[in-house]
Length: 128
Image 1 (cartoon, rainbow, N blue to C red):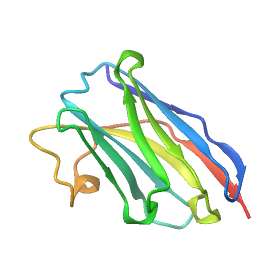
Image 2: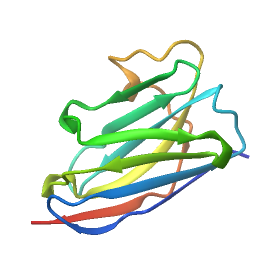
Image 3: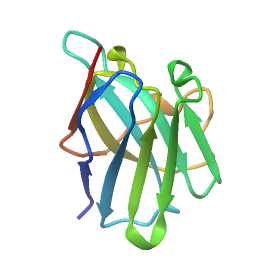
Image 4: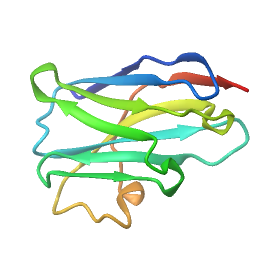
């Protein structure tokens, strides 16, 4: 059974940092790409970042602007999202999700893939 569990959210001041974790089980990182999405109240869900171990590639939403870094620790079955220079606009529930990799992940459309598995989300609140 595939499971994803997020942790690491919290309250931080603008300009601060947080590191989110997505602990996974039940699948092989070579067969899936893992992405972080976020959703703020009243707003559409937004793709934040994606990592594909098989492609040795990472992808980011345009709004990230070099502030976030996605990484994976295979030994710990965990994907991380390190977020720096946080802004109030980054306030949202952050979710990690997994999509089966049927070919190379397209850099221009990684957020449009069918993500079959989702975590429960972790709240990030940035105070200004």
